[in-house]
Image (cartoon, rainbow, N blue to C red; front, side):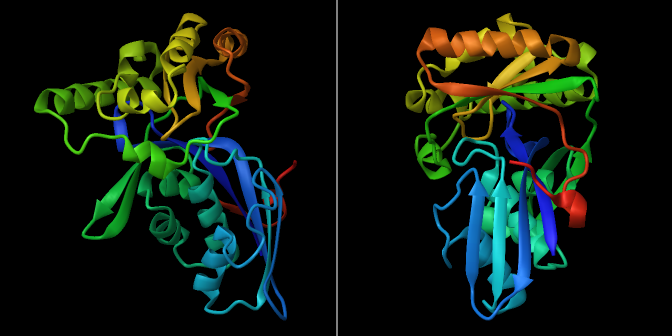
Length: 288
């Protein structure tokens, strides 16, 4: 069976570990019966772990209860860049293996229910764990928005990015984030009220800037080029500009210019929201 799942951008500024958005950049997984385990990967992350340690192989073996299968992975999602590659891969692998609840499987393996929910169900979501189980809900998302991703040519693994975060935050900072998150949820549903302040954050972005010191200048460049707001994507280092469709080209060009001005190698991707989440069969094929 073949299944495909989209990338995701989590946090989106103030929604630390609670908000995520599915994006039209994909990974597909094909699972077939075989005499012994075989793993093949193409595209992003190709050949890194083409053995039993591959995340897709571990997920499929867990779902099936054995390792007599072949698994093929084709991915467009940059690895270790803050675009939910692990959650998307776990979701697609669970679905391709025939899991009854790919969301629960992906959330368990990735550890981030918000990324897993976006990859499984698509759209703009909120998710968390309740009594040890992942729970999600959809949120309104306008069709008039595009998402300009600045993807640096540098890795930033989530454990490293999480390791620089403070153990606690002040009440003032918690209230700051809650207020900005309200603005963000409203603005993603209705871009006419989306303002740069909506992606303000005092929980994670400032601490992570030590790992990517060019980030503040790049975020400012996205907004000055026409983005309604800008933020880190997940744990980074990818940065995301939230823009109206008519402004996408200007924001893309501004992002490329900012990369050059800051001396940061990278690529700019103009993405739309994915509304479908996991799909199966022939339409799940991913072009590389």
